[in-house]
Image (cartoon, rainbow, N blue to C red; front, side):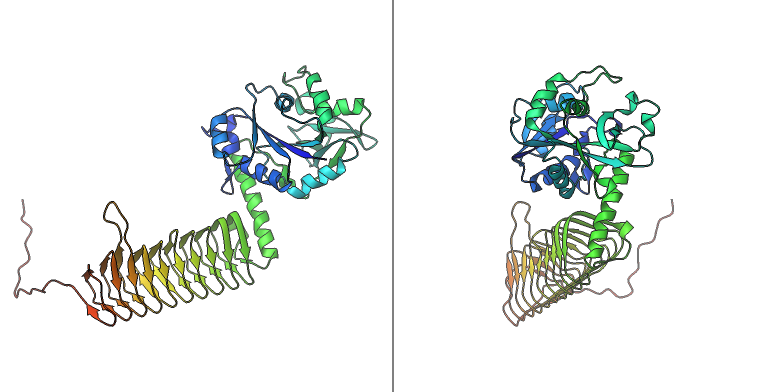
Length: 454
């Protein structure tokens, strides 16, 4: 039986007090809706139908690369109306999972459990039991069987004591959706078409409504304002930190760690406080990341130590390297084994060979550095003439003196030495010394200018 996914994403999110549509608000570095779409893709859904409304053009633009069928809900008349507008594109066979774009943490495991539970009944929901269900639709049962879902505003005092509530996540036979949705009424306290009313229709048709609960309560938490978004962010991060620690990662303080993407790790990885991991990253065995680092879409091989407050972006680092503190590896940085990159050194679109070092205040852009070379403090590759980029090549075992400027395109040969303070504009041959300095002038008994009092 084919599975479709319907995602409700038309709400404005007034309480966010933002020009950005609610489903585009970020959680762990990804829009809320992006989390839901990603989960739907894991289910191999035949079709992902996303209902848009407020800010729809921007929402579609953000997810233009996704294989999503968009359906507009021009007027927001309730959840039942939202699903109803999908009927022209919804198949009559198979089942649909109905999800919310502002409930981003629902897991593949919970949804598969819901699909399995709903196989025989043709309809099922995800519920959650809490001490205080204020504001949520209550699950009304009789002899253990679901009889109805009553919205909080329509519930009696007795019904409001019920602790089990509806999360708004459904699995429904498509043929039944085509049958039930046109029958919905808006005669209720909010004057809206409630999707929850299909439960009563199912009962009237003699169907039993299946239900499952998520493994983790935060899976079904929705986001309506900044406070809820921040709370969910921390719950989400705590769960990710727990999974990493179960894999053997030593997080110094899991409450001060953010993973905004995916991290694969070897053994005995150590991560200090306030580290942010973004995109897809990989850390080998015994990698250590110091406090305050930001690592994005980077691969760090075994034994490498990253000192505090370093920033990596699309970088590749070999084994047993020493990086930082305050180093910056920009896109295209490729470091071989045993490389040392020190404080306030920036590497961009450059390869650094085995065992080479740049320990202080250096910029290496569009460069190739061979093995065993030493780049002195204050050295820069002058790679840009204001319009075009040019390359600097430094051979093996070269020594570049401090405060040197290498004006690209230029080639420094193997074993060559550049004297400190030089501006090198021509190639330097192997095993030779090149330096360029003005003549030093000394004036004896020099009198400094004196400040003139006014």
